[in-house]
Image 1 (tube, chains in turn cyan, purple):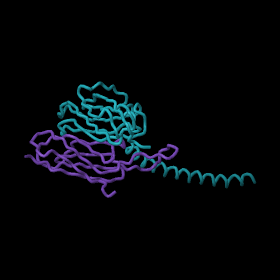
Image 2 (cartoon, chains in turn orange, blue):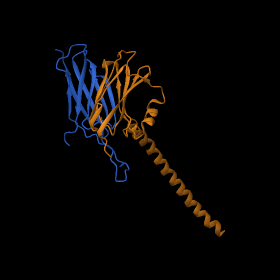
Image 3 (cartoon, rainbow over the protein chains, first blue to last red):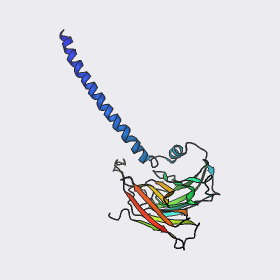
Image 4 (cartoon, rainbow over the protein chains, first blue to last red):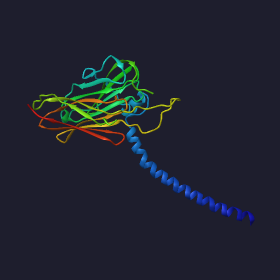
Length: 169
Length: 110
């Protein structure tokens, strides 16, 4: 009897604790599901990863053809200051409603955040051209990857020598 | 920095109807890069950088940039669009702190 009396209250406490714990978990789960996708969306493109992981994540192992005949990647061979490197990409391809350049990606292989930018074009642009100032952490390849509206991937790359890195920490 | 969000847009001085026009746009923004402590661990906080640039012409989207911290401070972007009618070219930069910075240019034909 004595042991029964000992266990019953303990059980009650335990159950309450369990129930309370569960509801707290439930609340955490709800908050979590609300918060995580937002955070993930903000981090979707620029994640700290190796370039292989980035390419696999973004392109999912699709074959990438050599597009050096079509893509003009303009970037200095030697960048004295890695904090500001002008890059421009021009794709020699028609921009019609049925066949156009959908995306242009700029990827810096050695950066901690390899995907620099993704540009989404509409046929309204008339020409697939983009330019930006980018940061380069150290000497390495810079690639321009073009995704056409039918899903074909083309890339061209060029090595850039960086005298002073521009990505800090 | 009170200068954050100043947008400057440069369009060619003479445009003809149907031309593909190259435009340069600049915004003043720190584009904070990831900081690390003495042990090399990433300091976990919300970094303020521009992650979206959208360009619209006559109210229709032309192109958009999704950008990361690999873009320089005070970023400069250039792009092309087809000038078909006189109207407004509008560029909106949005950053991770929720700020939106707008710039417009009037497209006129000479």
